Length: 267
Image (cartoon, rainbow, N blue to C red):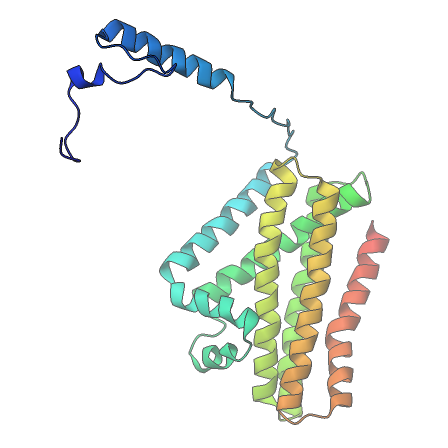
């Protein structure tokens, strides 16, 4: 019989049943009974793991943030795949950013806008859940969310203005432009990571304490990578190492310490 030819119903009746007993005359009824018996026997050997019930504490506005985040990722991944892939490559090879900076619409590009908005929305939400789980506080999450979102927006705007003005004063516009791009890039990475962690925190049985601690560790690692990139960019552009450390400590490390202290007092 040819390989692409289906067996006839008569030929199927001569198939050896599951218990290994072969019959020369195998009726359709017997064949069906053996097939049913085989299915019952096979299913009885399968052991299913009991699922863990997860009572979601997500509020409606949190779900809207998650929908926006994943919709943004799908949009930029589908319609702006080249730019999206270049941003991903920059994580391992920072020199790819030089090619991106040469393009127009570095800040106004849809990929930059959507991923930046995702970071701005997900960062406060993650730390709301972090505060509720790690610090075990009784606090209105909506109010806490906007209490973190407001200072975050002010911090981002002021830092961008300081970067631009310092680049103009020190006549290091290209160097500052490159570093600002790198800093914003790590924010975009962090926004995607927090989007995923928030989903697990709200809907998975994984320990929220573990996820919250993981998110904090990732934040520290990303900040460290960002500072290392800043040092490398400064050295490659011939800037004194001492000045680089003063610049980064003033504009990067100090604001985070102040923000952390403010959040701690708020809680």
